[in-house]
Picture 1 (cartoon, rainbow over the protein chains, first blue to last red):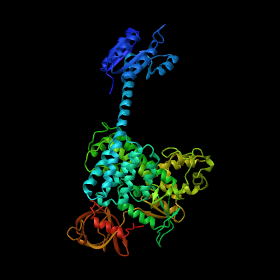
Picture 2: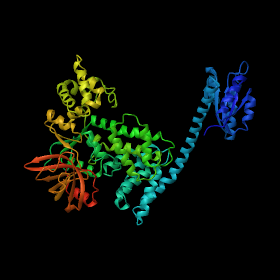
Picture 3: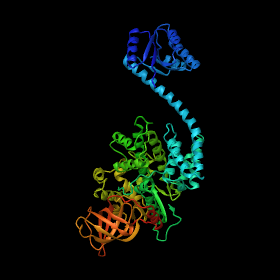
Picture 4: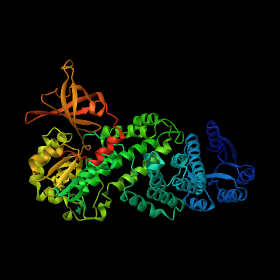
Length: 256
Length: 380
């Protein structure tokens, strides 16, 4: 999940050496550069990594770091690389330009240990976000395929082969409920459908009007997010119609 | 308030559902729900109150939140495991105070284990299930007899106040204080409110100790700020507020014996109906053996029973409170069922024994159907 390589643009050699040592203590291979052109050139061979650039490189070199950030982002776009770019700067003016150039985070020089930890932590969180977004995209693709199948299973419960189809529908609802990244609407509908299916105990205990109603709920999930407002209404109709989607857990002899 | 369309001829005004009755109605067994709905249908109208709704959410809603938060702390989230193991891990990380206390938490854990029937489940699956249920439960609170309380004039509001804090949501921050409903109870009707709180303070109930302290504090202040004290302490004062939410000459449906105590002194116009499982009428002969009478089995009548308790009538007192016995009912095919005496009452020379099963008997399906046919009205 976390990046294994780091490129650091830093002209203060003692600090750079200490930072490299700290990064390597966290199993990150660190390379120090004292000019931006060398760093950008080396980055052409880097697939993914953390890049920490000191934007305050001294007289005449004020734009060097910011321009390097722009070049790194172009490189990333062109070759589908995964760069996490952080910058050292204490100047508010530089921060605005650096953000426009594509810096992900700003660090203020503290100690090599703290800076290494901060860089790795921020980059890991960034990486988690990227992975999460990718997984959510996959979940949407999965939902597009799985919900129509569940609807088909529920419709088949009205047919002849009830027992295998009932088991299949129960299992499909359980699997859907175990998936990560469900939206609130999905948890409401799947929790209700799973509860109704399982508490019925068999397909013969599921009248057609109940099956129609829970099929309608799954169908709403196919049309999210557009159908978002309809899910609460569906749940309310379910309760008003007397279908009980609630998991009973209060003891009958509970005393207050 | 809303009228029930199939009210019975013996109906008695309306019925007010208190928080514990809602918990049983929404989260209890289907048998319990049926019994509650029979009671509701036996009245001309039904209602609840804003305070009850908020208390339900503060107890049940928050309990779901706490458990869901506990589940989210487990790692890895996607790995299935036994519910018992997951539950043990959650319990380790829970805060000292859990809404509704240990009884509700324990009931939820036991039922979850039963629901998944020993099959492994991932924390993600449990979170998704409970998250969905939490929304459904909040919605179910408002639906009674196929009607939505929010669409009807059936949520009594005597408790809106801009000063609420603590466990309950801040409900009317924008409202000027002099429009708050709770002012009527705490200022205009202060005397009766304090009197009922004082009764509860002396009643040896869960909230009594807190009430004794709060009342002694508030009454020594001059002028005393009852409204401020009540809104900062909804827990101890909650049942007193609910008592005065109940409309005149209505019944209150509850599982909380506090209302029996409060009614006696302060609301004689109100009828308290304790939520119980529907009784299955039996009238069959039974044989009772106790450790004292082990050699001589005594004959009695099993008047009625549920899956958790029963009433046995006999010519003599069969045992003392908490004492155990063994029951045989040939007519039901029951042999050596163990129970415990809870109450004994002498009614016109015969002894009625309220008992509780030590091991809950598993009731045959046809018996449950019979109870539906008989209406199974809980005893009032």
